[in-house]
Image (cartoon, rainbow, N blue to C red; front, side, top):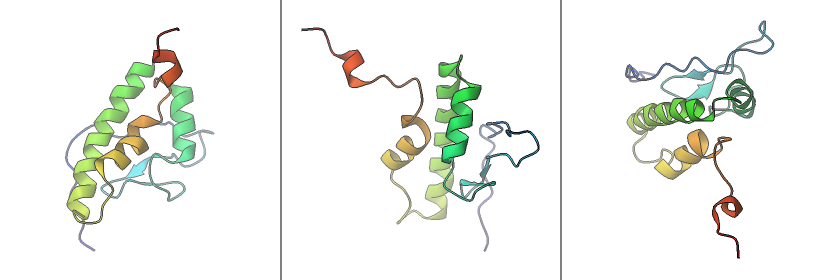
Length: 111
């Protein structure tokens, strides 16, 4: 199989492996599958580790994930333009789960 070469966008180097001697839950590009468990990246373990790693820096996590969302959209569309995930599905997968997202009750005015 001849896969396209990924662009030189943000390098997915997070989350760091935990415990340190275990494989890191990082994506294989351009497929965006987890190197450690084979699931769609960010997998559940990667999300958990990212939340912990960026607990004090939620905006940094948002910027990091947004850059990777952009790269994944580009890569996955080039791999399968007809049947690939929609932009909304990719947004939810990469960005929508983040800890910086406020619930609707936080944004509604008090009665």
